[in-house]
Image (cartoon, rainbow, N blue to C red):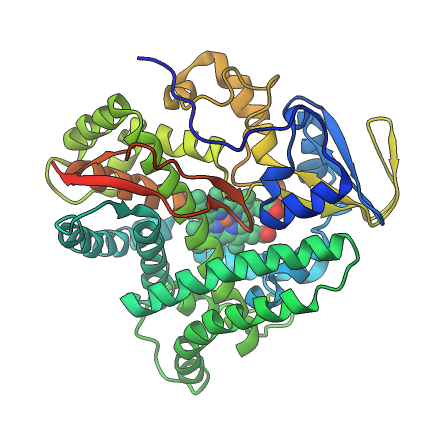
Amino acid sequence: MSDYTPPFPKLSKKRIGTMQYLFRGWYSWIHVLYEKSFSMKMGQVRLPHTTIYIVNEPSLVKRTMVDEWESFPKHKLLWSQLRSLLGNSIFTTNGEVWKKQRRMIDPAFQGARLKVVLPLMQASIDSMLQRLDHSIKQPGPLDVEVEMTHITADIIFRTILSTPITTEDAHLIFDNFNKFQQKALRGVVLKFFRLPAFFYERQADKFAGEIRNIIATMVRPRYDDYHSGKACAQQDILASLLEEKDPDSGEHFEYEEIVDHVCMLFLAGHETSASTLTWALYLIANKPDVQERMYQESTEVLQGKAAEFGGLKKMRVCWNVFRETLRLYPPVGYFMRETAKTETLRDKTVKPGCPVMIAPLLIQRHRELWSRPDVFDPDRFDSEESAESQKNAYLPFGAGPRVCIGAAFATQEAILILANLVQRYHFEPIAGDVPEPVGRVTIRSANGVRLKVTAR
Ligand code: HEM
């Protein structure tokens, strides 16, 4: 079988000028990259008021994310970009506030909960299959991005709030989040250039507000019930957040904090998975041999029944497809940190407060860290040859103490969804309809991902 290289923006041969940075970055941050971005050990982007240091070398990545992570806190602009949606939640906070939050949220994601959420995930998948059975009877292609956003949002609703998402809310959130992504990116680009950003920030706030309202409406009665002493019937993640107490002060999370955390878990937990699953379907549609092997494997493991907890580990091809999709299109394409004090990065002296960017998108397609870096090859994860690359140059879930809290949750969910989809349907590309990857808050397609979907 021949190699398949999936779509990616054409890279400039040379570094682009500052104004081009502004214009292209306005549209999508991955459109400012050039060839050397994928082969350098470290790079710099000089902007009028600051310099962004880009770190690709594995030892430096380990230093910033793992060994000396406290010296490289999350950048303040990250907070400002996501503030209206996520408030002061764990994704954006630093220092003692973050430590306290992480201690209190960790228990909600401990291993045992994965078994508890498995039937909730399966219930959500069953609803998706019903929707799809209906949709594929309609003429024309199916936008799998809309569907993947719906299912992942539904899974998060069921596991956090014990309720399925309505189709109306799913679409409302999808539309508002797309608009939010665009405005929030523009606001941040302007802020990097120290230009007034309030116009875009106000718009981003408006779209974020729509999403927060949907979630706050569900949290309020549960919060009030809990604090008025009513017994909690649900065993979900919200119940765990309501019960959790700060081990030092003995205090519970306050209402606004709970809303911030639920919004953050909702966003971090569905947008990332939706992006990965959408790309995974596009990739396997273009690699029918891989799709067929996923079908054979899931038939053997599932045997026409719902997946059992232990069975997921046996779906190696599905897992490798998930991992390879995360390598090529990591939803969180970059992490923005800043120097807390003066640092020496390779031969550069970097002043406090400078942005330091660690980008899985660059590292995972790096010319010297991976072989055939742009080729879709899920089997590479089983080859000895890529063992070093996997160890040193693969971080779709981050690394160190701030590693993703939901990595195991997302992996279980993705394998389950992919296995169920290939069991029931066949996915094919549509000639001439190639998605354009764009980098905003996550890496998505500019105009959806349409496929021909038929029943097996
Ligand atoms: C394919 C799916 C996912 C990907 C690729 C992903 C990726 C990431 C990455 C890269 C980070 C670290 C960011 C940084 O260091 O700046 C992160 C953090 C986080 N993720 Fe995920 N994530 C996924 C799914 C989930 C899910 C399902 C949840 C929860 C339901 C979740 C919750 C979080 C939280 C709470 C953090 C912040 C952790 C902290 O700062 O202490 N993620 N995620």
